[in-house]
Image 1 (cartoon, helix red, strand yellow):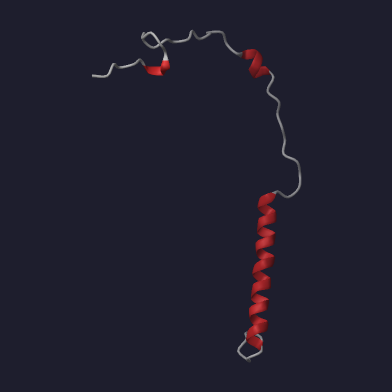
Image 2 (cartoon, rainbow, N blue to C red):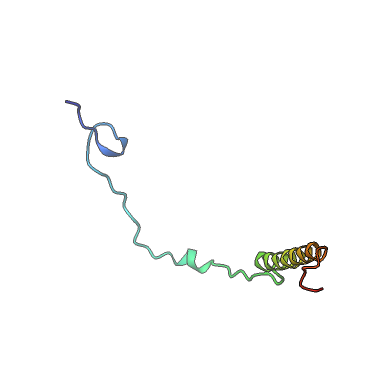
Length: 76
């Protein structure tokens, strides 16, 4: 029967070891938080909306031009 090894890849057996945690409040790190404001202007969401609208209008116009050849378009 195979011998069972300990977890965590430690040699020599032994249980799980825990690291001591500091109980000091971390006020120094929290005091150095910098507030960052977003820059003005349009973001990527506005750009996607504008490009999608332009492509939709262009697609409708191209379909209308194609249908107008056969006198079946919307704007005859």
